[in-house]
Length: 321
Image (cartoon, rainbow, N blue to C red; front, side, top):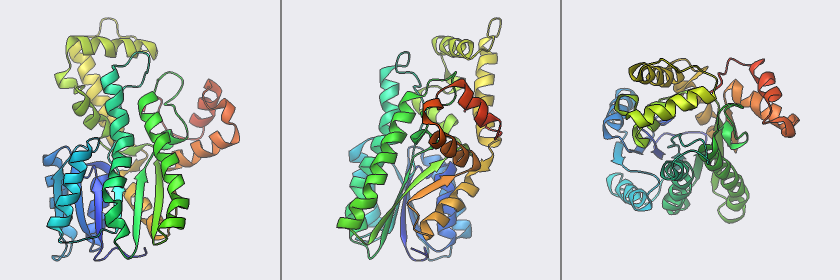
């Protein structure tokens, strides 16, 4: 699909980050956009930004939905059909995601499963919901967002990262399997696997709000858990007040967004360029390319401190992201 004009694109997680930038860039090229997110306010901002650059004929619609809930995704699909007056779509970006519940041993089970369900079931259920509309198109493209954590299940040796990594590995395997499935059974469809490194998005901020870890709202018990995690990572938290902990957590989330080596807009351009070229595997960021190479060269070393030392010697990536 080398052009997006007059196509219809579906984007999950369109309120911020890469989802927002995909919507803006697609709309700017004359593509109709239907987005969902859990936050209506951020989607309204995305819609306004799309309308600033899009031709007047382009239709931009929003729908509140939690992608881990199938009934909400089906309602989103039905809204797309009605509001865009269509029986098909051409592009589906399963982009929504959150991060949390790093440890299977220590984390709350409900938070662990919520993280896994948004990041994995959101892709699977989004594909199930919109596949009939893709099949009804003259040509269609499914784009699933995994992560570098889809081939490297770590944030470094001092941080557990199980729920997110397990989900992103599932997305990777599912999407790779669809390459052959579509070739055999739906040759007018293509599929792409997106694996970003550290991109400047609000995922840390958004995840905190969804999982009840917004620093401004955290209870004393939650802050005690944060202290213990800081201690496990080698940071001295004794004598630090709760307000200082809150401030540090908020600052960390903002720095993840603002100090990343690649912006969400740059990431969206790389993704859309990969779609145009029909690439099934889209690495986003130099850190993603470096990690991919290092893991392939020596997979047995991937979870050792020596691996992290090699990686940090080649990139400005920060431990704990």
